[in-house]
Length: 110
Length: 113
Image 1: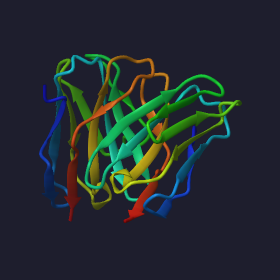
Image 2 (image 1 turned 180 degrees about the vertical axis):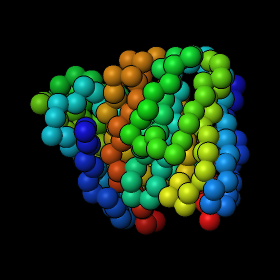
Image 3 (image 1 turned 90 degrees about the horizontal axis):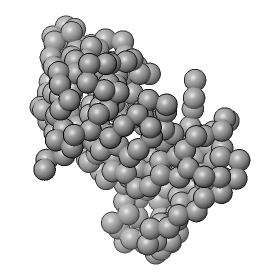
């Protein structure tokens, strides 16, 4: 079945350092969504990418969709303690269902 | 607006017991979903309902049943709980069947002993 592979599984950074998580698929992705889940919380939608090569920014967060639509990345510039959480990529299915990667857990040391 | 609500927040069951997890949304969304989240596994789809009156199996449906009671409510039932069903369960909704952002409830933490 469809699989979305996400790396790394964990990332520990010093506050102020940058952070990147990657999402890869062996098949072409129709679209990719990114979610953030704070510890003890629920996933919260960040963004959706649809077009090949698409780049979107939200303040310190930059999202990219690969030219071949087989990979995506989320980059955070100058991490803050408020960025702590698990970041998930997910492919949208034909029924609106989501196929999630296993997530990257980010910890930030102040 | 409450968004997506789930009850209960926590539950402990003994093996073989049954229970129903409740989910309701006040967003007037058509599609609703049940996911389970296990450590290191991400979220996996159990069942979904693309519209009122329809339900379909997701990736891990075994041991579960669902009911789309009306447009607002989508319940998940465990008929005979097993320790392997210990997990955090999230309900979500989205406006339609084309890929849109999903809105998640706060989750139900279920432990089966």
